[in-house]
Structure formats: C-alpha cells, structure tokens
Image (cartoon, rainbow, N blue to C red):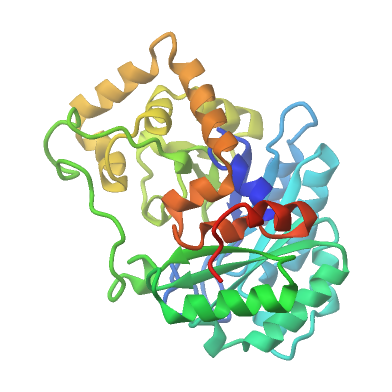
Length: 362
C-alpha cells in the first residue's frame, strides 16, 4: 500500500483509524510531539484487540495506522492488530522511530510483527539521526522492502528552506531510486518542541476564548475525519496533540472509548456528528477555536445547527470526495511542507510516474 493511497483517504470520514500503542520510546528526540521517553503509559492492549476484532468486511476502516511513542516496543500487539485488521480487509500502516536499527539490522521479532503490515514508515530527521544513523536506517529499510512491504519516510525540518530537508530528501531519493515516498512536515511547537519551535500558522479571526466565528473564512478540516485512539483508550475525533493528551476531551471531539464502544458506534458518531460535519466542511477557525467550542455556547450551537441541515451530510461526503480526488500532494500542501508535498507521490511504478507530473524538489 503506497503512502499516497493512505494520504488520499485522510479527508474521508472514518476511512481510517489512528491508534497510539504506547507513549514509551527509547529515543529522546528534541522535537517529539508526544514527549515520549523510556517511561509512559501503554494503551490497553486487550481493549485494542477487542476493538479491532470488531471490524467486519462490511463495516471497517480502510486503513489502521499504528503509532506511539514507539509502537514496535509492543511487537506482539502490532502483529495481533495487523492480523485482526487484515482478516476484515483493513490494511495496516506502522510509523516507527527505528530504535532497533542502530546497526542496520531488523530483528526477527520486528519482521514477525510486520508480517501482516501493508505499509511501513520510518521517521528520520536531524533529531533522530543523533540517535540512529541515517545509513543504518537506510539498510534496515532495504531489508523491510525486501520482505515485500511498501515503505516511506516521515521527515521533519524547521522550515521549507531548511538545508537539512534538501539534503535528506536528495539522499532518500538517490538511495531508494524514488521507490520510497517522503512525507515532509515542519516541526510544530508541541511536546518537547513547545519551548523552542515556531508556530507555522496564525489563528483566524477572534481568539479561542471570545467573540463569534461569523467572520472566519471557510477552512475545511481533514484532521477531524479519522478517529484517534489515545493512550488511555479514549477515542477522539482529532489527531491534534492537545486533544489526544488533555482530559477531559471536549464533548464534540470525543467519540467514545475502546473498552466501552465498538467500531460501528465510533464510526457512526464520527460520520454523523453535526459539529464534526461543520468542522470538516467549513471549519470553525483555528485548532484552538475548535477545542474551545464547549466554552462558547453560541459558536457550538451555530456549528450544531449548520451540521444538522438537510444537505449537511451530502456536503460532507462531497467535500471529502473533492479533497480525495485532488490527491495526496494537494492535502500535504495544506498540512505538510508545500515545497516538498509532491514527494508523497513517490513509491512504486505508479508513484514514480505520478511524481514526475509535479515539480518535485531536486
């Protein structure tokens, strides 16, 4: 499964499920959005297995994305979830910091965990390279590719003109001959980067605490489309790190809990919530504005009213289809690095040809 296929599904409500498996990680990267480290909570494994076992061929997400922390600290859980998902027709993707690849090897326990995984992404950036050398990551990724798994790289830099981004993307393209996609993001001021990184965007209109949203320009939010399983088993409608970490989750962004709800219930709430329909089709301002809706009764009521209109469901479906049809690079121009967005189209014959139609940075 190519990375572009996954990204194209991102705006489609409930087309994917993002599950965090643990906040633990043996690395201590300075930009970690989850502030992961050697100690941290594990998402309840039994509840996760039951939840994913509830997928059926007729009612399932297209993609199950496993992340952390470092998900491969729990290889048996990765293996079980990928097998359960595959039985229902769901494909699994894993994102790893490559802690195991210090000598360029892939331990047998990791390869066994990836047996039913359709896509594997490695995080690589100036922070990761201080702990796992680039050459070692590349050797390990070749081994994973040889096992028949499509691979990609998730790369972070400080800004579009970051010299590191130019260097590492050239290196990846040369080493893997454009057979590995590259998703480039800029470091955001969350987690361990909160004290030093610079925000990329400025909130629209009024602050999150005061004022109406009537003057906020439309800004459909694709990040409110996939349910996210947080470390305590709570299912949120948004992957924003503040939402994942803060408790309680605002009511309009809480979809349930894996110990209490099944996939069908979570999927239904995600797709049918009037407020989420409004967020996905028109937006409600910045992420802070969205999180603060519960403290702004007037704005919350307006979002509920807008998403309850007879045509709201159809508009939600149409908006998702238009964003999906626009392609993975178009979505990453909004949420990732504009300059490097076409690199997501690499990977496989079709990926290499598609990327050639874009102005891909050399």
